[in-house]
Length: 116
Image (cartoon, rainbow, N blue to C red):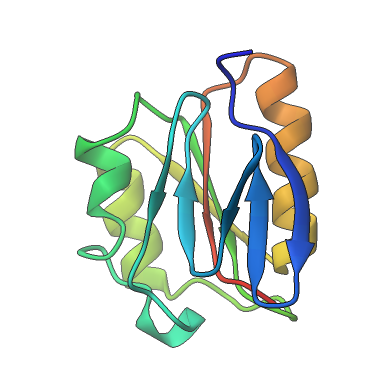
């Protein structure tokens, strides 16, 4: 009951544990927060700071890039890894499904999601 479950995505938003979000979000197992990032091109170490300071410790960060997958720039990947987190980019739908699966397995996962 205390876990954040992504139950729907699309039409420019998300339904997460009974709440609708019409913006990008960062989802942790115990909370969801809004994100100002509107496109994958805007993802930076600074935009991901909530993963390192707001949420519970995550070992894996999934980036929902929007309708298609994109590659995480080498410098960003290295900077996130230096903070002890593995980063993986997927299209937003795959990121939502993967987050739910890993969270359900008890993994320390977070997802930064851009709406589709």
